[in-house]
Image (cartoon, rainbow, N blue to C red; front, side, top):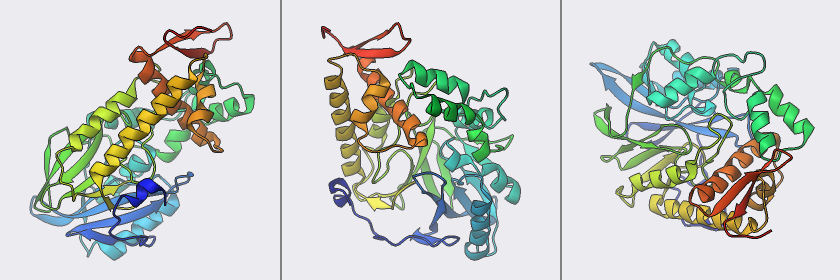
Length: 360
């Protein structure tokens, strides 16, 4: 456990739900843990006791990726935890594969509606379409992503080819998305099981990420906006090459300032914890340190590829490298749009950043 983690309180310690089982974390609220095929090997999902239009049942929050083994574990949950009642709706916090991947299957399995923000619903619908001629808009993969990473210094032909060959990566994890949805927006009040949950929308990690807060329970389902151990990925990718997501993310965290100190945070990765404001403070400090590191490095012209080993001092697999490059560019862009860095494209076609006023 790192020093920052020790400042947080984990009510259940190292106790985790068994595969296909649930663990109660609040009245009418159960924790599910599903496997992921990444270095980040799990996602937390949530099952809430509910009643809609006089029907008793459950609301699911987030879904897991589309894999047969995950479907099988869901079937065990249905058998063991639903008390013979149906799933009444599926709420998805955002459009990343581990959150929306099985939404279509769950909604079809239970004839239940999907509740989601409009931007993330539309993005997921677009990205889940099969790749055509090696082109797909689904994240840091495919030919467009290769060209983006080459512009930012990725010279390894093997890595380029692997990214090119992953043009169908998103559809492989999210093969379909329901054709219809119920739109949720920032500030909406959703009644779940007789309790009011407020939608808190955040930006930077996903187009329109929805967290859910219940004041009665003092529980925050934070999705990926607040995580206890790892920092939320904030990246710039090929589909929005001039994005500036880091200030969007950091400003979004201010929406949690008014929540009580004792709020129980239910994150998508890691363990439920208390210490929301401590963790948000850690995130602000973390990004301030990374921004200073990047600014200090740019006394000489630096590409994204040059910055990655400064920000990430460990061995990265290809999946991690694409997100590390996206995150390094997000920090460079934050400094560039603030006027602290200049950028230029060299004769080799690579974009490099230099501290404003620096002489080379």
